[in-house]
Image (cartoon, rainbow, N blue to C red):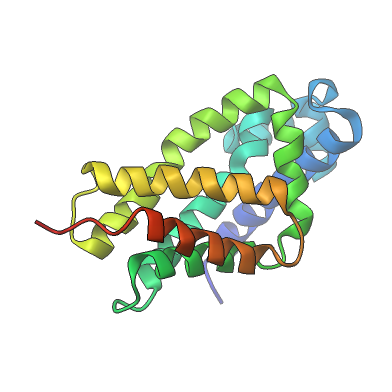
Length: 191
């Protein structure tokens, strides 16, 4: 089994809180949902909620944070001889398989000023792991401009595609989009 029982319970509680936050926000509107409501829907106390998230907005953007961590890991796991932009396209596509129902999160988030602000804070943190994965892959430092630019551009393009074209075809569309981006933003030289 993966992890201890305690760790599995933590993961399950976190997932239940995220799911409850999104479900209640979609049903009632973000402004009308309280931390206490989310905690009750997940079967835990508000204090337990606060062990996982600082605010309901943090719970709502956690989906993006977790996906970004998986994407960075997937980029690192791609075959080393795969070109950067193909590796990025494949890594992003893998993370959106079966996620069509979750793309409504983007529309809800964009309609709520508190969530827009939370997403901006989240994006500042999630670009780092992707930039580091890109840097590792091409032999640069994560503090170099090119890996940071790649992470920011790919994140923005993927967000736009998800908003524009959610559905079952999304993973293939993302793969194609990222590869096309690479054709316009060729890989940096290592010198």
